[in-house]
Image (tube, helix red, strand yellow):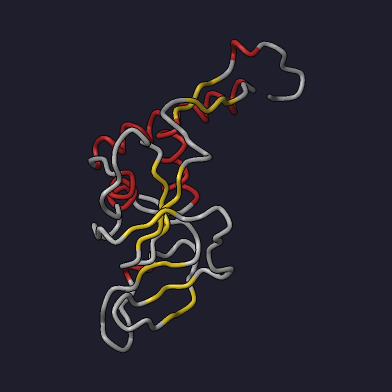
Length: 163
């Protein structure tokens, strides 16, 4: 809350998808096509979400209002799983639905991660075919890189990935 502000009713409410659009476009510097793809929405839908977010940020800046983030289901302590095919770590917040496949590669070779299992300390891009590793560059997707040995698209390993 801005200094000197006491009335929470003046807060600007930003939805999580609006926050995500700002993060993808302005922080991660993705174009609208790529950001829309990452959010799994159409480009026109992304543009509407992003425009709404920009207007809310501008309103908060110009009028000194606090920004409150709301909306959607957010889980911080859900079950985590690992895919034995691509190495992806992912969570499963919809516990009422049975988990059958990896959301990244579609493989059924998945297992729940035990609480004491930790990802690799350093995140790397790894070839799922030959196992060759290379350093992960933050902000750059591993799957856009090809293995120098066998030309297979690389996957990220070491920290949870999201989809």
